[in-house]
Image (tube, rainbow, N blue to C red):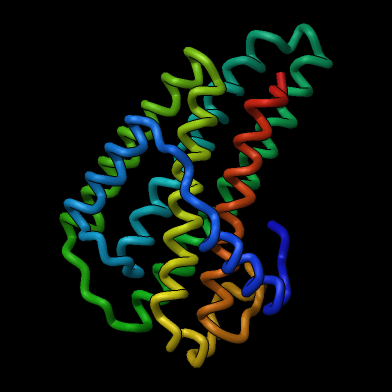
Amino acid sequence: MIKSSMKDLEKEQKQVLATPRMNYGFLSKSLFVFMDLIYGRKKTLSKFKVLEIIARVPYQAWESVAYVAITHTHSVPNFAQRIFDFVKESRLQQDNEQWHLLILEELIHKKNIRENFLKYRLLPQIIALSYYHISWILYVIKPSLSYQMNAEFEDHAEHEYMEFVNEHPELDKESYAGDFTKEYGSFDTLSDLFRQIGLDEQHHKEESLDRIKHPRF
């Protein structure tokens, strides 16, 4: 993850808001419509938390397939090494999404936001499991299909975070002093925190699109 200054984060936000969303495919559109039906169109911390629960699973699916590939190609060390490098790269992205999730959970607790167990605990796990298998199957069929779906998901998340900050100017006055600043970074305001998370999603999108153009193995 690349950390940016407050000025750079504001610039990145403006660029995202001025950029149209990607032309999402059927699977991505279906997921986003389903999310809006269940959780509403309004952007909330709880809805973002659900997004982050789902966001990790494509990287887990790719890692799973890659380890199977390493098992079958270890007799060709150079090729197996390239696969393992891909695993490490995916794990970094997965870890970054994990920090997003932990930070959102922390904010939800601090703000005493009440959540329905079925909607915000059980159902997200079911959605994530389904998304995992779809990502896994698409990757086995053709990796670029899974990368494209992830790029669309990350593009959606990137815009959602940046629009959320734009819709809530009061976040510029709310300081952030979380428990994960050592691991994720410190930010003066919640606005900058969410801008950085949105920028992370942009980087993940770009990495998935780059994998389509330049396959790792």
